[in-house]
Image (cartoon, rainbow, N blue to C red):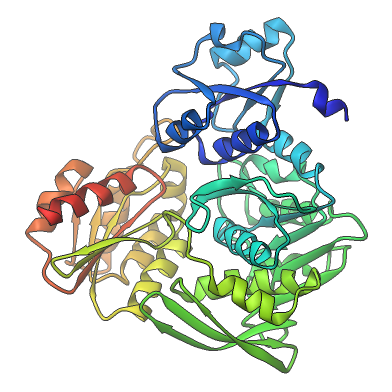
Length: 458
């Protein structure tokens, strides 16, 4: 294989969750992997422990002996290492293109797409296939609790990856089987409108080969909009009566979710998950549909999913101190915020205190009203400043616009605390036994949840 002539692979932004997984997989495939990032984080440290050479800070001198440079969509093309690679004639490719090459190394590739739930569904599938002794290769956007990593090189002929719609990068994949959890307006810095997003998902679905299949949740309005334009074999799932695979008799208690699986009108049996919320039942139902597509028995599917222990930063129970439960979640879209708060309310009889760190100026500008609606489900809300990530400030866009919407609703159960460092003092004056503190956001909020739990232990 010509790909094997490449030996030294350099990653710009190697500490990102998606980049680090691919880097680890390539290292396990005996490539020489190195890279750089601006800061030291858990992903960087894990790769260093595995023997990957990582530079903190970007420097053109780091590229010595590199055969190819891989960069994520978050890295600007003005990056000094990318410029140096161009000068040296080193091939420069996006993360998604490298992932597209990797999935070709296995006979069957499974890519999970959708606005929400990609990481969870991918991890559930990985756990299910591992239990079924398929020994899959796995590259996901979160640390799977069962594996304590986001990347696993298996000996089987299956590879499971996330299909990220940001920057239309999933169009580089062309998997054997595509799973679509849902479609909602998101990434408005990349897509003109919802129709543009739907059409791009349709293009992704139709990139599946004629002998492959598309597994799609038809509870989403936008997935229904593209359903009959998909030109590949289709299997549907969801709570809708028209779905081929349906979940009924939903029950919730603490972090347990139980439901009955139906194939058309035939009841196949019950599955009990170790994760809370209706959204996780739907995520697992996509895995159920895939399991049958691959010829697994219901017992294998059921037992595999019941072994699944979750993903870090997805309703991640940090601990309980003084009868105060601390939970962290990656929710950064209004639908995800709503689903996570609902999961907490369905599973526990606790007062829910949400600490929300909005992520991106563009997302806040687009969804500030919807964020206020979703946050309103909590018993008390603390809103902090926006985590900008890759974005420049947009004039007039701060967390204040979410707070103003809460005021319009006549609410008084909230605080706007700009600096995350000041939230701890506010919580100290607010919390009481039997509370749940739920930290939400895709930025640095997880560090606060860890820090506050340690504070409670004192």
